[in-house]
Image (cartoon, rainbow, N blue to C red; front, side, top):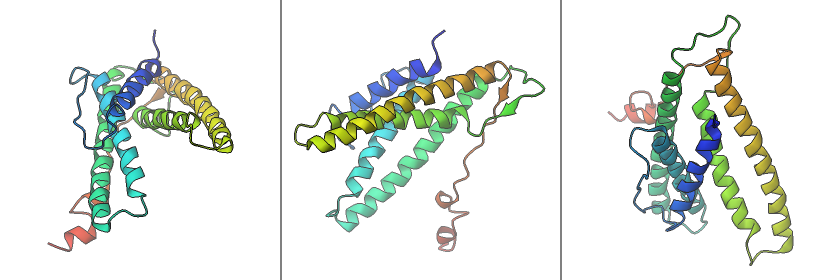
Length: 202
């Protein structure tokens, strides 16, 4: 049986490569996977991460116009909320998948849900892509290339370890050795009823 991360990783790579064909944060989003599938959710998840990665690059420009920076900060906030919502959607997929599994009497709960671990894997795929870019630069010093090569090696080791941990967690849940809950994120600063700066304006 193919492990979940073995299927997810190529989807993440496809999203990143598709984005970089135009390398434009305002380019249209076209999901190549069927709506409602886990593949479509994983592709969109990594697309959001990729766009936000470049938002974060742009906003660190020391010469950015303050008004443009504020607009971009709002877009980053929206992107973060979209990312959180999608993680919850992916967790719901896992919850449904394992809903009929009876936990063993000594089953334990994991410190993070499967989808939040998958979130880390998506971002790790981005880190590897961009660190490879640094390693392959022809305008950088040998010292820079060497430093980035060492970082890339660490990231690739992390990919192996994180993938193993995610697949092991899913195996444990499917066997009843662990059990999961889906906790909805309660981000108070996006909610006009809980952010005092927002509700005090009413």
